[in-house]
Length: 482
Image (cartoon, rainbow, N blue to C red; front, top):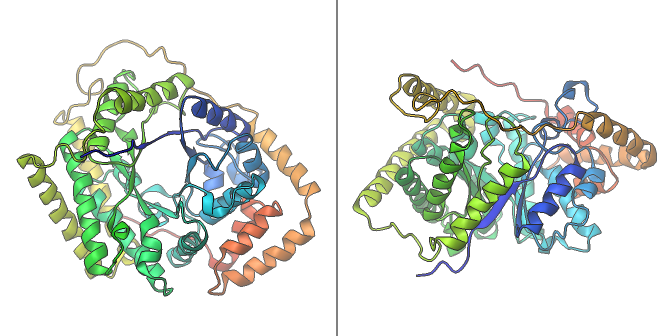
């Protein structure tokens, strides 16, 4: 049996300012890339403008800096968004970033129904592992569901959420926990959408997932197989989905950044290749291969090229995409798949008994489980039980000759000057009127996406929109975890 198509190859292009990132976009597209992934900087992810005092020194450091639609116009200048699939790592302000993408599509003459891509929009894992939350859980879930509902009606080719186990795995979860906590989050989102009276088969086919892939090849293949099987059962038996596409666990995979080392960095190329192989054999539909300099910096041009070539060699020179589930039927793999599925289901049942994922997060249960496992992993490495080449075995005295990528030190200054200019030339009166409308809609059951689209088209900034929502919803105060 033939798969019939390759996975979508993706490499992160978000860094610095919109102009720099646009150049990286164009380079990747010139190299045959049809899937782009954007990482946004910390101020953007937290709903602040670059000129906020809290953001000093952080602008453009871990992704591209976005204040308004003006930056998106620079970001996608000359990029035909009807020809590419764009994945955007954004959560708390996901509705705003999606609104900007819709507005860019309109500028290019691309209607929403033709837009392709993914917005991460998975807020629950932020409280668990990643930390870029803004509002309390309940209103955050409302915003997440607003995006899912809007996409189900107007963006049929767009993935309205990427339910992400990746960040929990990077924080220290094991394979079983990654399956269980990811699917438990997925159950929560499905339940919240169903409360609005939307039929399961109207939105479930566009739910997508995001997993990590580690070094244990057989365990990782089994993990993907177990997750697919478990999600199909949940959708069919728990939610009574009828459309076969609603039962599909469509997922993106990224190689494990936490496994990559600063010592003997070129060895990371081997790790990434084997991890990518496991993801492909496990059936991923989309793949990102980390750059070998991940432990030090944002990727350099050389590192990005090697990461992309790694995927291209696997795709075009190995034949591994010729057969679906090529290792299926192996006694070891089948038994391992069964064990992972059963153990993950025990976690899901326990979370159900606690009252659901929101309750489990508020009690600190999920965070404690991950932290305890992370401690055990680190202890095993320090004791030499688990071998890490170049760290606790096979060490060398050689110094790295790799020159790390460094952001332009003037990015923050340029961003703030552009923001000042924007505020002088836009229609501030109209924006204030629309922000008042946003305030009313945020307190009603009305979907928030249309007013946010209106606001971004008027060049309202991310912080202006988020500040209104902060005023209405408040901010999340995490529980102390012991």
